[in-house]
Image (cartoon, rainbow, N blue to C red; front, side, top):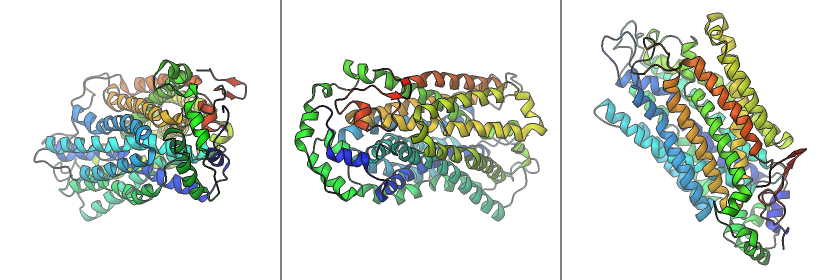
Length: 534
């Protein structure tokens, strides 16, 4: 019966916003709070790790991590995240969303604690252990992406689905901010308890032995919010769309959702069988039929997420270096080790508070009003504009009297990343693919994004170095400079504008309507904008 929709799925689509929606947002959102905290807190302590483990006696500058070590410490979690997105995304379609959901959380809790307990007699062994545990932490974080997005999309009603999925992702902003605030508190406590001279005054004494506890406490704290939501995740029922459309158990789907929605729902097993036996539903992932129907959609979601994360993560992970370059964070030798953590954390927290968090929630407010396509296009456009506005007159921004202007422009790029593609690239893949491929395709899209993050995280370390070999950081070859790096990021954002046109609009449509699972046409329109039929 093409065009028919199961009563249980229709009940979810037309349900008024209820308490269970907010419960699902909190349960899934706390996972993303932890994800962001764990991924970004490392940028707060890399300078401290350099001072503790790579101090050079007699040097005029504090110790810094060697290039290969810095790249590994900053990027290894992304490698794990990419792996987790692909593996757990696939597993979520094979075993069910609920069965896999708790696994990812436990991996995150265990590895957050283990990261802070990194051990060894030599600097290399300590950091090798840290990298090992942060890789597996990344695997757990990666699994949270496709599962949280898919669960939220399959629980939500079609009127406010975009806002609900975006709200889950928006918890990242609070995670980034919490990381900065917690680092401020810990560094302030340790500075008060264990005061130390600046590096210029006493190079060895500027890093007190107790500083080794600072980075460990900051990393381990990420386990707490994840552990608090484990029980709630274990009690969530499987989504009706997986149970009915993939597991083909209409009775269980109706029973689960009747309990959640507190209404009577007919099981309609016959319709499930008719849907599952339909000729249009017998293709597999990456088959010719899949590529015909969804190939361009998958290209659109993977390419835009890849391009966005190159720009987003290269800025976010290394914003402390940009702030140092323009003088917003004092020269390292004028601070002791713990003071440096405090100043870096303060800068990250201010950026999160002024631009990152507001950008996320602007998207939550408007995504179901103006649509995913418009927000993503607008975000990439303004990111391009502001990146070039920072890059072309870069020398102007480095003058002391213009530093506040630089910070404002830099904040605006973050605002429009988050009121733009950083959220929409997460939302759309959870809506436009069939239920049996939804988690896998979201995982593939997210993994593409993390590949972009790896390019940004590893590449920026080298690209942003001065072309003058006498002005590069210790151990780094000459690069193209901050100005040219920002120009490159502007070009990346412009490419994001172009690839956005491959992504269909899902606003106001049921998941089955946009993916074609109800047997209706897969054409989608956004006003006068016609999306290609793929």
